Image (cartoon, rainbow over all chains, first blue to last red; front, side, top):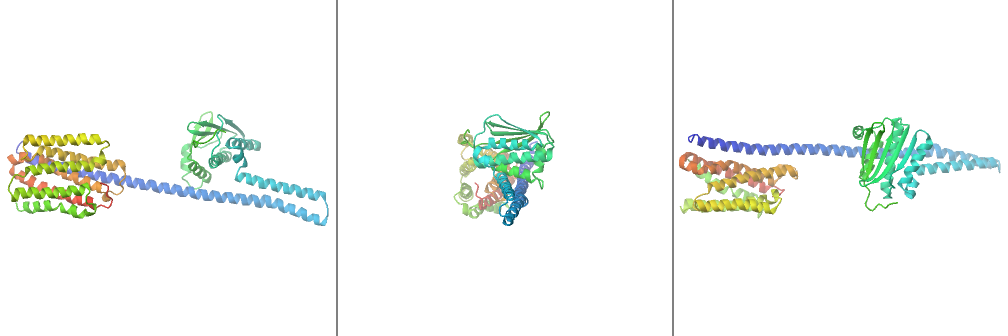
Length: 266
Length: 207
């Protein structure tokens, strides 16, 4: 045994060196793997950011086109008709009927311009707050008779920054528009609560809804501009969204919006 | 063996590589370590080969200073509390001093030196783990701390058993002793100094 010791010492030194080299190589390879993973993540995030920016630009363009179309097809047509009627007054100096029709057309034009303006920036939001604006939105849906809508406030919503209220309103508007467009729902319910986590908004419907997996896969796909706008708005107010299904209750969308500490109770 | 003297000279002067290559990082602890190593290697060689007097006290002193310098190099990297750093390293230093005085100041404390080398291996491994854990260093090849860990791990792994069995080899296997002390030890010393030079020359001075 003693005569073997020198060889064992040499073998031991070689083994320790091999182990040390192994540890160093492990660290190098592991670090490279981590870096490549980080680069991949960075690339995905950049791609996602790009998609969101593109969606935002596309949405802005769509909105402009919609406003242009409404102005051209509705308002311009109404005003042109009013102009024609007023032109007639040149021939018949005072025709009460023509003047009344012109007045009616001008009133219609004013109402349509007000509608467009309201769609661009809901006046109620700034003056009356989020709670009443959401109630007004639900009432508008109810009036359309396409589906029945209910609004329930568990705890009075506090007034908060204009940009936060507008973002929440737009998100809810977009979610409801999506439900009307895609889910074939007959009933919709909007519930709000003021919790410790922040403002809670729960949207429930009885149609064919969306799950969290579907949402997460759709926001990375081309198209789905509405959803990407929701993501942008959520990011801007640091809010979170969750889509889930509850048997017997239907599909639910839960929004949690952390409110600034200085938000005042209305 | 004809290789022994040139290897000894190369080993002593290999300290100059980190000293000059790392001149931009001069007065850092790692650079001071290289300067200390060079000074003591010259001193030990002079005592041994020129003055022919006992040199082991100088080696023991260098081994202790080397440990203290290396411990301080890792102080902010792997120790969360100052107290644990002081207790652990203080205990090891005390152990080395007591065993050296118990054995003889004029004899190399090989067991104490082995404990030091073992702690360098652990320091190196913990240093590398810190790199993986913190993920602050993106490019390892540009990190001084990474190269310092590599240098100490390889140096200590190569020398640990050599030093531990020096006394045995000296008494029972003279050829092994010559190999361990004059070749293996010197080769690992040169390798360590080259790696330290790489560490000191890195632009990202994270030590």
